[in-house]
Length: 322
Image 1: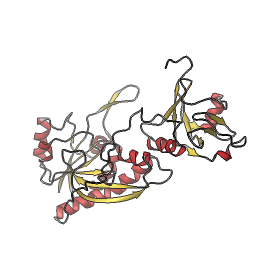
Image 2: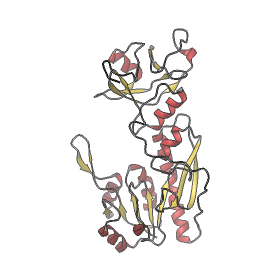
Image 3: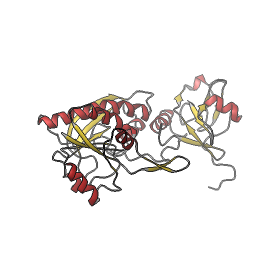
């Protein structure tokens, strides 16, 4: 089939590689426009755009996929199907109707669970022990179209969103190509999604990534892992923001000093680790990134910043108004 691929971030690249190695004909890619990046805020092409440019594949970068010029160009390309992985813009009906087999989306959840922009992050945040990927026919609704195929993927106890997404991107690429093969052969039909088990996965914001030390340790652990690598879990110390890598719940009895309970956000500095109290048992910090610094192990951070036991993370800065 003639394909026009739509995608933007690096997570879409395994699917592009798989399509390029398939029997299908990749005639163009659609991606978000170049975006400012880095300290100089220079315009940088998306990973999908850079991939296509390296291979002399035409790149379409409409501000909105309803622009007449984009629609005309898509009609000229005459794709049979438009596979999609994390494109990042809503596709209007007028564009959906151009390819004869529609737009086929690889989504990183077992639909109808976790419809939306951040399915992997929500699977980790909510403690799912199993997730997966679905390839479905794109409609104007939010991830509501009939499903062509799925795969399952266990969620490891220490998985970050980045870990899980990387595995799903690789396995999902193979699923996407197998669905495209089935569509081309006329041997595959999409099945409507169930009406039960629907859940939504909106994008996690910086506010969502703020660690709530009063939560149980398991919830603190899940929040940090779900926000790793983005948007990045964080807390504050004396008004400064600290970015946190994954944490590890520990037993209260293992805390030096007889296992005294640490209050939420209270720090205990030990020789080789830094503990922080939660609503239940403490957690051991992993990496800490202080303002203007590189990430470092928590014990090294505590020594360098001269952190003493008893300081409280997440407390309002001295003199701050309520």
